[in-house]
Image (cartoon, rainbow over all chains, first blue to last red; front, side, top):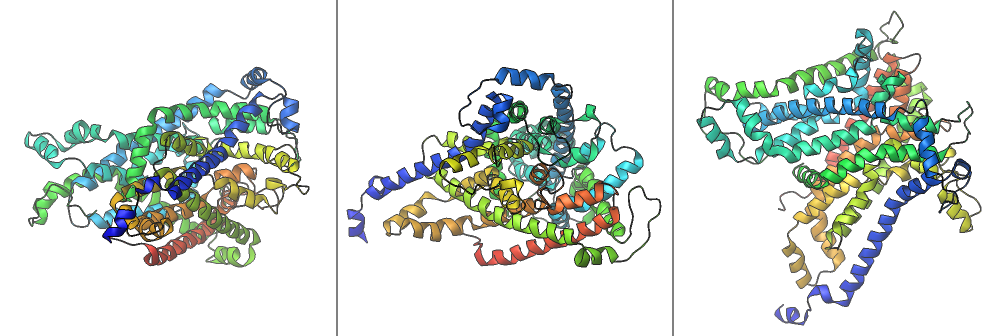
Length: 299
Length: 313
């Protein structure tokens, strides 16, 4: 084997490796274009005027009506975007707070204490991940309608979060808590700190990446959820961000299945709806990538 | 979970001692999770089963026990049920394969020491950041048969028979599969992390031994990441079977055009939560759906024995 090693150049520099690198970059760029195309088309459609946007597919806009489009969208009587955003945020904050609090407590319980039967309880909880929401939704809907809570303060959309029902998040916190240095916890116990005190003063603050991940996943999740709002929201004043786009999609709908869609207004509404998510990602991207990667490996 | 957990020395404790040291605390910390399990999983499952044996509607006063009639009706008479399950399966399998391959290929590209890794990673993550209800709107615009960009490009290229995409019953499901194939963001990051865990020396040794890149992929990369592939396959399948938002947007909430985008969650939604709110029948369908998911998951676990290599690290 030795003589073969002698003949071999460092593989980075061989001609074959070079062509492979070029090929890699070409693929990377092609995929980037595919990923960027919708965004590009979204932006230029937002610039077009109504006539062009709804009848022509131009790669570069002939008309420029960006500001008029914004004015039209923002002045539409149903488009109460601040209200819709605040509604979404209210649901998000209630959901995320409940989940972070109760799931981190449960995750800590699983990570820190040892007793017979723990694995069985944990697998019982994990197996609920396989249960589709479709199987659970009907009785909960029935309950909410019968008790009259269906449209009170968005209760059906966030109440379950306060009962640690997101097993993935419990799992995430458990994995993180297991990496905490044990001597730190022992030392705190020696000094007479209560278990709850240790949890809130030491364990939880050390788990920022997990908390950031939950915040991001729940933000996107709440934002993207169509099922919940379609089920539990009917009043216009309770509309959430997901409703902000359908207003314009259905602007000229008149019963028949073929109708004119004012894509310029839809695009403007879409861009506005994207702003908060993009900002949040820009700020939290690094922690998120690390911690998604972390759970993936351990899963 | 192969680490020693907890604060105990591996010394045997009596139940009483253990209760005071550990159990008590666990019950305290896990209380909400245990209550939640019974309120939001255990009770609904039992209640759904009871409902599935009746003909209850939400606002109808009476409900009668009908045995397994709902199940029989769904399995033998309801063509919409069969169609929605079939389309959900097609959707989940094909888009799942697409997502799996693209996310793995992209992760491998990003893992090959490229410059501007962060930029590319962010770009590939974009489809995940755009809200899913907006994704539907954007692609409806792009793929609009008469005014969309894609058909415009195709007609410039000389295609005379332009596809109708989401507007035609014969291509709407395929269009939806195509769109959902871009949802590779999270899976790509998970794969990338797995690839970065593979020790560099393995490839260096293989290189010295004269193994081709393809052999390296087949003999090192694939076996090393096979547990993660399994993890992603399970997640992707369940996600695909349960996908609702995209189909809801593309099909205007009702499987338009002519039920071609009717996935099971949409049909179930229409049955249970639109007039006349047939809770009993919807509950029976939900149980059948659950059994299908369960069956598929078990099959995947069985198949995973063939390709998942454990203890390589």
